[in-house]
Length: 424
Image 1 (tube, rainbow, N blue to C red):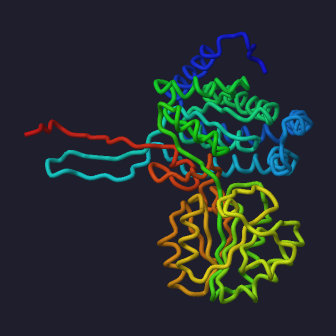
Image 2: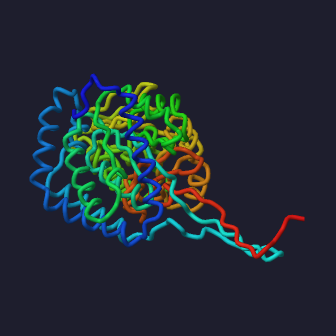
Image 3: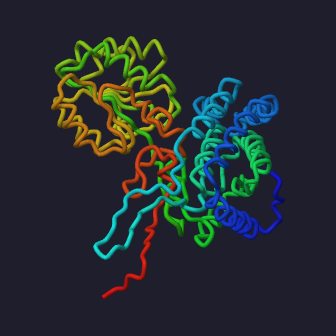
């Protein structure tokens, strides 16, 4: 790490936050074309820098065992040419999205002739704390800057060298485009005390966004002196209703669980209506067993699942982020909804059904940021639903909920224009 541990850490954090605040004022004045030019330049530069980025990522991956990373965490950490190309394409996709800054949300002319407009403006400075996923470094920086915000990036030490290489590319491109390079800053110390110092600087930081484990998020909520947009656990459910097309249901389950297991919108819990359990669960057993998934099942489901283990109470709330899933047979749609609202994390939950009324009831009553009918939980993603890259999937209800893209990183203000109107 570049910051010597003997330096005044509190002073360092304040200095980073001050620079970010100054940069945010410059960003708010940028034209959309300037931000898009930066995004395209970054995409091209990332492709050119692939050898250096992979070399930095290899340092992190070689330390994975030392850092105690699980197989799922190593998968999230590892970069290759294909993943870097995907990161570059995401920047180009963000450049193609409409710039939210200055957008009129609504407006009116008052009876006295006063013009009133409600317009989008940047939040200001974002303090983003996240786990060891290098692609998130780029996604977060891109959507923050495109939405007019400066960002302070506090990534996991496990991905430090990868993130450093990526941020270097983005700040170099910022200089070339006339953007303030301090709009994107990577925290240069692994000292956990730094997080506390940043969270105590509301005069410079406008919002904190933690994306990681439950302990991290609870700490940020407890210590932050600025608003927090929370990204809690992803205990996501697939419920297969009595009328479901079982071939479709199996494909949705396998994709939701196995397409990529170490992510927050992967399915962790399967609920099956009792009327179709005997017919459906043997197919589930074969499909998940073939893919090495351990099934934690309730007593009703166990006889139809080869190799399954009995589920515990803790399994119903677990975010496995790996090759495990909990499975429960429920007697009704109402019981499925009750189970999800009790044990779920309000992230992403899906129903597979051919009954319109069941779909409507499920979407109305399940209290989650995204409720899906007849599709994979993996589709609750900024890119998949047209937001471009996301900084996280919020399980909050106030300000931002679900995938947080460009608009979710803005607030609004009212612009009033008159020609001499007075209050009477």
